[in-house]
Length: 84
Image (cartoon, rainbow, N blue to C red; front, top):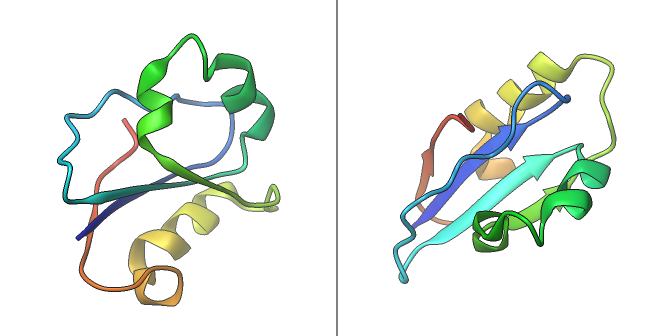
């Protein structure tokens, strides 16, 4: 099982999760600078397989693309959670 979410734009920050050892956790984001700046301060970021995406013109549609089309980006069973 893969739990996944998307976070585009500087509006929010990923929240802590209770991670199951048998599941994968994937975060799609365009916030490379923010993540690198805070990864040591917020250990919960290390729980995620962070996949960086170029900043899109429309961040809302980009996030929805990953939300509704997981089969294009992930293998197996998936579960979407909101980043906040």
